[in-house]
Length: 207
Image (cartoon, rainbow, N blue to C red; front, side, top):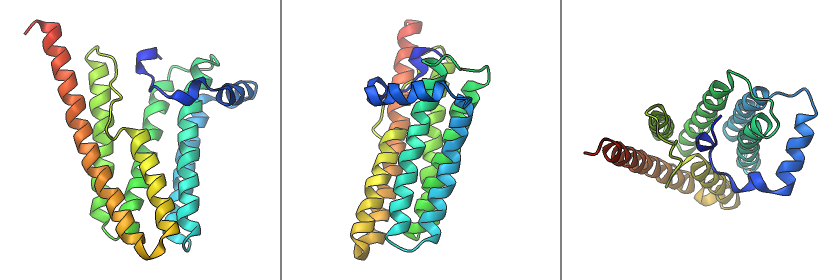
């Protein structure tokens, strides 16, 4: 994996992340298995959100999102820094991500009482990734800009769930507000990334 194809994550350079990475590298766990574990955490989080009583369901879902994000960081670190990458690593880096995103966002729509909004969030989130990868396929560095890239929408969802758990009388309004911000921000992210790609292509062609 090229360095320009990796999402910039500040925590990657932290001492604790490097310590965990070294521990994982010493095991038989592969980066692809870590990527797949993120989907398992997403399934567990969705089940907690939709099936468990408040506030525990929302709190457990928030924890599952954090664990999913840690998987998304450590799969790359074990692959690159740990030298355990595989030819199929790029597939495992992307496909579980899209599945986990969709699971959490669709569940958000159902929890908020507007399933179509959750599906819209999932569609727009997938489109942000599509535009990013499209830029890479055109020979450009992959563009991870926001305002609603994966870490932004997931941490926003964590904050929304925690607030909804703490303020149960406002739970539906908070979930709806979070979903609307994710949908609007994801749509804007598609526009900003597409515009940046177009500008780079025009500059490269001399147009």
